[in-house]
Image (tube, rainbow, N blue to C red; front, side, top):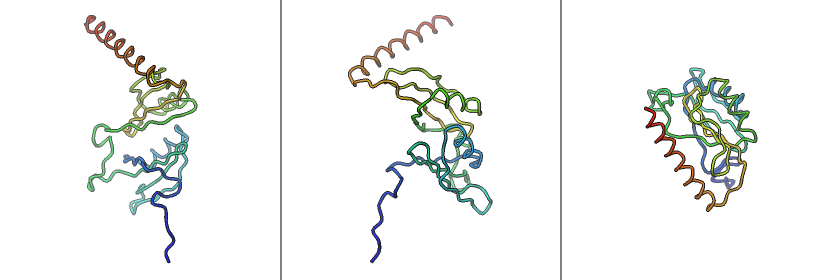
Amino acid sequence: MTKQVKPIPEGYHSVTPYLVVHDAARALDFYQRIFGAKEIMRMNNPQGRVGHAEIKIGDSLIMLAEETPNSGVRSPQSLNGSTVSIFVYFEDVDSVFHKALAAGAKEVQRLADMFWGDRYGRLTDPFGHSWSLATHIEDVTPEEMGRRAQEAAKAAQRAQAAQSGNR
């Protein structure tokens, strides 16, 4: 009789991001140094490049591999952009964000305290992937969040109008 296996393996979640990168070995090093990722496993392909790897950031697994354009598996660098962003909570987002910038990431949205209760910023790593980084700083009710969202939208409209007037 065969042993019953779990449909979702132990330690995995229902959804696991899978990143495709150019220079996966360097990406693994970056994610370990900057985001505190722990390398769980790595399998090299016959050419000695990373065919599949798994890292853990906090309690979440991320899989990644080297791009193989001839198989249709391409990195954001090959595509000239990414269509997704990975959202990660850290205990000290400021430290991680600034460390990432110093290591070659590009700031997309500066860190700020946001209306939904997070200190939040966005960046693009040196491999083209978009990361939303945050520290939760305040529990906000849905009603208060809605009120604050409207205020933030009005402030953004005023800023845009003022900028248009300065052109």
